[in-house]
Image (tube, rainbow, N blue to C red; front, side, top):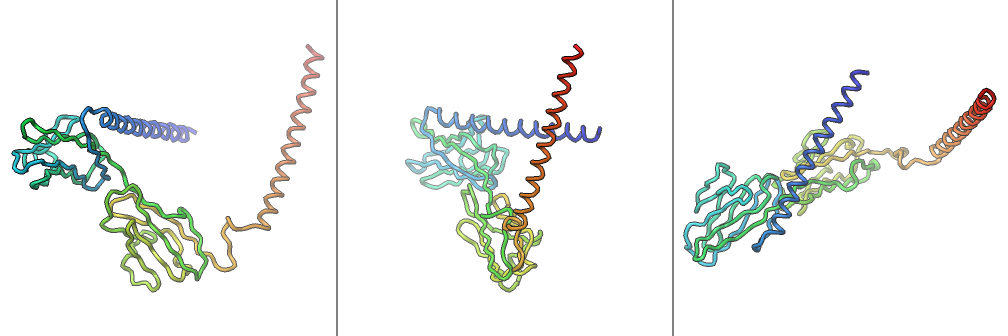
Length: 280
């Protein structure tokens, strides 16, 4: 009993901690939105995904204007001066050219979101403002988490990337935790698509069943359980007949038992009221 109580208290503590973290993230995102919407100067929005590279443009109206600087507005951190990174965070670098002095942020993190300022030393000084928003890419397999396929028929799994701002470097497929992209298995092919990858099995066998995972380089992975059904078998969702009759019998039995219990409670309550009236 004491152990159960400890588990309940621990789970409640974890739940409260998770809610607090999500609340802080929500408030931080709302603050970024407010900063971008209420800022008095024109702002350009840039969307990047976690783990990717954000490119913040700074257009030059005239070449050789002098030393361009980038500043992170939320903490007034000087990021770059000319072509030199001033920030201790080496993820911030500039990509200079005669018409653009872009700031690159490598391996983007959620906390990189916010306002950035590019200062161009003209007379007067030009200020360009960028609002960086961060998204987290994830994967989906239509039909997941469970798919049923008849033995001998074809199987096509499509892994789609959602909320991604750049294509993946690779997409690996795993079956029971083992990568199968480069297996020389007859009738099984993996192809890259514009928005992910597809896995095709020409003639499904019983050993093709199990857990499949799609794992892109720049998005959360997704899994699906494949159930290979022999000709005479049917998954539970497809069964009828006997199962329906069995369910009807169980329902009727439960209904009858409930009626009897209500009748007993009513009778006991009736005699209890008579007893109270007689002896009070």
